[in-house]
Amino acid sequence: MRFHIMTLFPEIFNSYMNESIMKRAVEKGIIEVNIYNIRDFSNNKHKKVDDYPFGGGAGMVMTPQPIYDTYKHIIDTHNIKEPRVVYLTPKGKTHNQTIASDMSKLDDVILLCGHYEGIDQRIIDLIVTDEISIGDYVLTGGELPALILIDSISRLISGVLNQDESFEEESFSNDLLEYPHYTRPREFMEMTVPDVLLSGNHKKIEEWRNDESVRITKERRPDLYKKACK
Image (cartoon, rainbow, N blue to C red; front, side, top):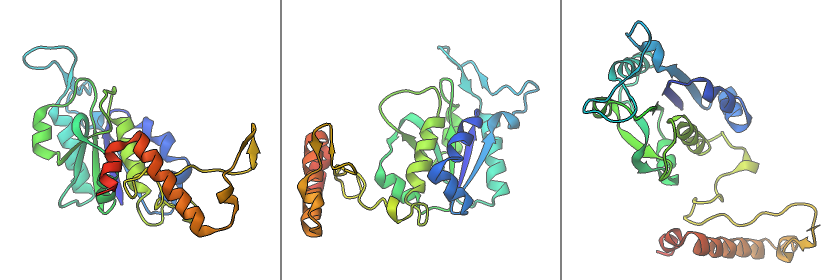
């Protein structure tokens, strides 16, 4: 799977993609991450990419030409016939595990990272297929949300996680939050590991984990609990 990132701050992605699971996935050739600096495609002699909004108001708006030319370069270079372009914005649909799962089946995803007060609406109308938010709050740019999408999508692609890192029992995989985990030592600060986890009885362990997932979900995310009970 190939991720194509349109951003004004490409260096933000380098550190994260060169660590841990993401690094291994890239080295194995399971995912490919291509980063494009929108400023490089500006026709302005000063490489300007923003301007004042028509109608007045605070802040600046990203201009359409550099973004569109970046997009054209990506689809032409990689011969993408039906581009899936995701704009990271607080106005978008809230990202979730279902969206991540659906996108993990794609060959290419183009991620558009906005900045300032946003991007010219005509870019959204022309090229954007999905507007996605990572929550009900505002960030200074789309770079952090883009990294979240890359991570959440990549870990669902076959071969990215090894068996010890399997996502199948993680939170949201069955509309339930994940059960608690314990490791050595058996006692820490006078707190002990639940006896059932030391019993060796795999059926009872599975039942305990399921019960804990249900309990935690009911307490913390009643919306998910109702969904899981349907």
